[in-house]
Image 1 (cartoon, helix red, strand yellow):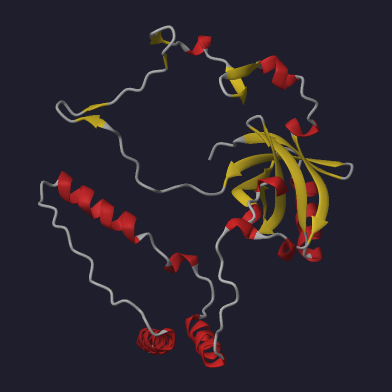
Image 2: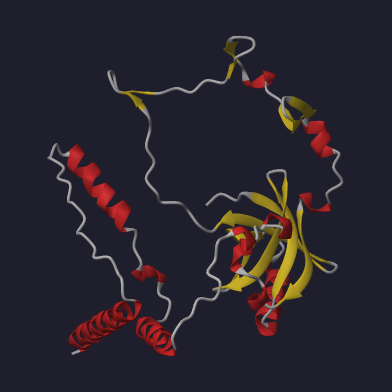
Length: 269
């Protein structure tokens, strides 16, 4: 992996040299748009409608539209003059409990690796955070954008999660949520029973992208010159009785769980 960022993780008066790497990758399939008559990939050009010509990169500048049709130009030297302390450092501001951070704040995940000379200080911070059961709230600038971040321990590694700022989180107040409709105690008990029957340890490897798998099969079949056959989805009955639906769901969950336990016994015997 190639590091996306190099700098220092600042912890009090201690500066830990680190490298930052993307912790995730999007494995969704990507398509190119083609011109159907000749199957040539479509080329997108940067075109100025006022000048009526293609615009080279050196003639493109950043503009902020402060009102409709009016812009202020922001150049590289303007960005360089911004007094942001965190341009080459991850500055730890506070230590908090992980449970206090609502997952809605998380954006992207990165791994932090100690750079030359940072092994001991890196290990010290990692072990201290692990022992205290705390995560660090910090600031970092990545690609000219300052972000709030959480630094935590995962599998013997410091992990940085970029976060949204508080004013970037939308309130659900505008949603049309139910105004506490009457729910019978038996319905609540059945719902809780269903939750219990579906409860299991989180094992991310058991969840797979079925759409991507099916799409790959279509692509492979096309490559091999086979005919692609579409399958109509099975019709689903409209649920009318909430209680009956919960009861049927519990029965199905119990059958699925029992079948899984039976398969597990066969594997171990």
